[in-house]
Image (cartoon, one colour):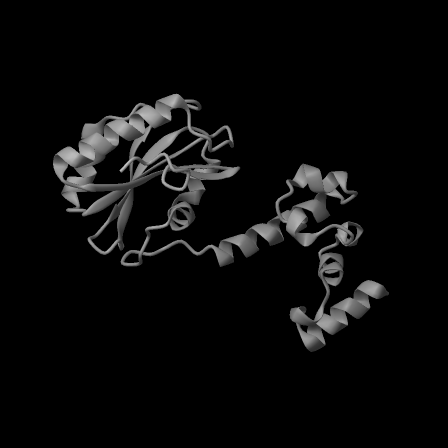
Length: 204
């Protein structure tokens, strides 16, 4: 009966009139109403099931939160500024769930506006050999003013390896040689992203 009352209030007053617990009950997840929504938003289906949700209810809740994130994190479009690592992550976050490592370049114009993002190399689950020649071929072809290097970690941990740090320095040196500004190297993963600039490892 309670769920029917909540549904009626949703229909008459809209979702903003409902509490977090009310909204969860409509999704069939009333048993998780005592948990903070910010915590629930990042739980996997299996973790939601451990809270007592059935398989279907856990899948519905996980899907609802993922749709909310996708709506809030609209990726930048061509011609929009894409300078911050957050925006780069929004643009390339599909890489976070790739099963093998890929290396991409985000190409920007003189005002930091997006020209395009392009994949330049595909590797294995744990490595992706990258040729600076392939990286800068795309940069020169599109007449980009600056570039952000991006690759993913299928392990889920975005923390850089020593090899990632070495590659970053080699690519920055290559950018200097061809007269292109290298702005950052962003590693994306299921656990978030790592920015060499944000971490203070981008020596000017």
